[in-house]
Length: 332
Ligand code: SF4
Image 1: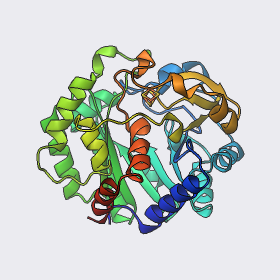
Image 2: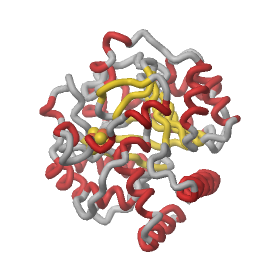
Image 3: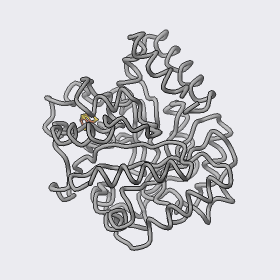
Image 4: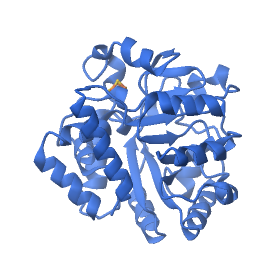
């Protein structure tokens, strides 16, 4: 199976409960950013631009856990910044396992190998390593030579120690799809559990020429995912067909709420208009109807997984054919 049975079962139960309660807008994945500090300064990173004046702030462990309870999502993505430089990261992960959450730990892998002995051993944790290409491209985007080799070494070691490991790859305008195919083939050979892939979002303050238009996204993703090659994607087949322009979805910005040291970010992981002190205020006070493609110019080129994968999951529940497709994909 592509995902642990416990994750699929918990998610299905959660979605059913929300449906029976008649809730339309609810969180699926909490994006928890305990700190925006990082040991790198990647070229395409919006966080170090948006939060440059508050990079020194961090959430306390207690604030992280309160946010997890407040939000209630069954999946927690621990991200940042670089979460492995957050001092309480190991206690946080342990407590999330204890609370029966499903956890994605996003990392640039600089500190990963060293951190492995302190990570909780649980099939609830997936380590998600940022990899944007083969060595020259990856090292250039992340700004330091040797980072690709560091990441690959850490992935191999994590796999050898029995961890579940996926990679997340951002596709930029300059990304060479043949290179990404070579990368994905190699990652399959070293036993990666899954591949997450998404087009980059044009964050404010980051060079706009790096980013793809919707048309360019369709073209690149048709080449990458419509080529008959059987890469082991964690991105759902319905989201990938959306990226190829074969399906239309409205985004679900509330489904991946983001908590960081300034509060609950609104309206979404990409756009920053404000922060709210509580999750409830963020959900109730954000004017959701103002956002989305065709409503806010900042949404025009967005096809990010954080906005659209939840729409895929929500809508699949209403169409037996799509649900069957997802089920079959998960079983392979
Ligand atoms: S379309 Fe706009 S509101 Fe929706 S996820 Fe993308 S940036 Fe956020």
